[in-house]
Image 1 (cartoon, rainbow, N blue to C red):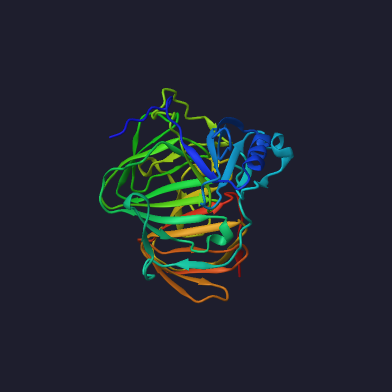
Image 2: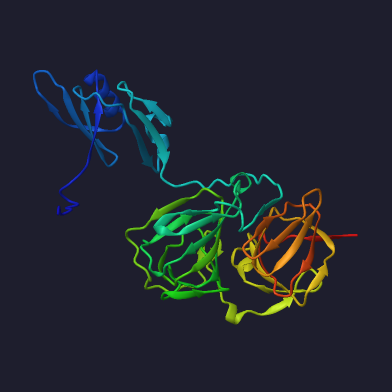
Length: 368
């Protein structure tokens, strides 16, 4: 087995070249330096280096040209500010900023229901985990909601990583998972009914899970970058639970410490997760239960941008204006757009509803 020597080894990218002089001039002007060239009498190969890579220009190569991304904190200082160039040999050069810019698309509102009984809804994802997409069209890319299962527990082959993201929630539906987070103390167990936020770019790692773990994961926006951090070791020596990560504080809500209060609809109670405060109003996460079985609620609408709900247990009927009546049970999810009227009916006494609102501050309007 080979041994990796980081100070002695490097990789080379071999590119075709029909006009070696023209290609050399292009890369040198871009900021590369010429290291080697041969043969001397009629050069056919030139070796250059720059921006952390080694490039070989070779007149004998017939492979297609490559695409090279140059990542820099100072894109305006390279190639006179151009962001895309094409070398004489056809290689395409992209000049990209080192810092990832988070772009959240505008929400494309519409009513959506995703039922657990929908056919072929589970797919095999990373590390053998099973994923079910709870908002298939992702409201235009503004949000992703996933129902995740790990049938067989044990150590999880995860690495320290972070997400360039606006908001992320992990809610444990069943089983348990062992997690560790940057500056948040030693690893801990997230149990059924518990949840955590993963503030932007907080380093974290999944360590272990039980059999039949189920979690609900919410991410804003739907597409975001995950970066592996090879330098940070968790747990960190520093303990700073009040640390802000791009304006958000890590939040670990535990069912055993929950307090219940009257919900915004009569006949229900809810437990507040503390996430609205931790995110400074970017999101709110609540678990709602009826005080007893309810035949019908008042017709209401809301003013928030995204209102996502997942049925943790029990059953109910959802009536939304100008939509088919939906009979919902455990594992079903729905999104109701702002200003759309809806009513809950035939609410079972054992109903438990997870509600995520983005943003967390909004109004509920009752209609006669």
